[in-house]
Image (spheres, rainbow over the protein chains, first blue to last red):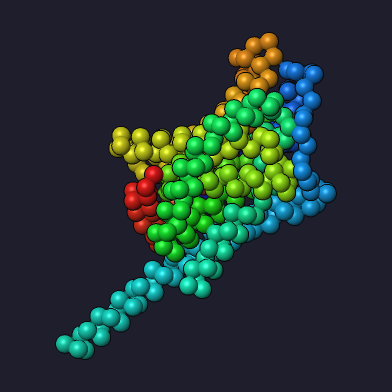
Length: 106
Length: 240
């Protein structure tokens, strides 16, 4: 039942992402780009007074860093959950061993 | 000892890997100097308290360091998920809700702050001049809201899953509301109110379906974690 609920929830997340993509006609550019356009309207005289120290040389490099980030983040989440699962199961085994040992001593 | 170092290294790696796509941050140079100074000063005390608490938490043992890295890694994954939204533009969740629930708002401030520095330096997202303002919205206000909502709903006797969902969702949404407010204060035009509405129309509206996704993903992750580790221990024993 709990697994069933989790699957429903995951499908809901996918739907939340997929529905706008198929039903909304948009450029799907970043929200910060739109914001800078509003700033231009609000205060046409404003000039950004500082530029980024370094920028990724291309969209591909940016995608690379983006994919790397997702992979490493998800990798550690998976590693940690697997580590906890193993630790918990290991404890159960050790518990049984400890018990039979003390049983022998008795 | 070697093991502890290895774990510390892991924590460091996950704090240092830059986050390239954070569409919500205020762009480099896009805040006037007086607002830069204002938000730096407002954010500073939260950072100082956060660093002290993070150190205390990490000293609780290697288990605590791993759990901290886990909360940080969750922020990395969620902030990498750049999703299309109903407004026809893209944004991404923050992922700070889980860390706020597990470790409290101040430690989350530090996790978010470090991510924001490296984005600004390596990915031209956000910025050094806007670092204080962006840290305030993503790593101070969002986590404070998430933590407050979680504790409040738990006290009121709400189901744990419902509490986590609403905490993460409202924390996410409030981050973008604050960003809109910060931009409106700096660029009020003829009316502060209208200006705030304009920015919220971009940031907050785009964020609604993403905030719901963040709420659901946080619940799923917390429950998965709870199968193997008593997450409640972290929630309740942490010195928030």
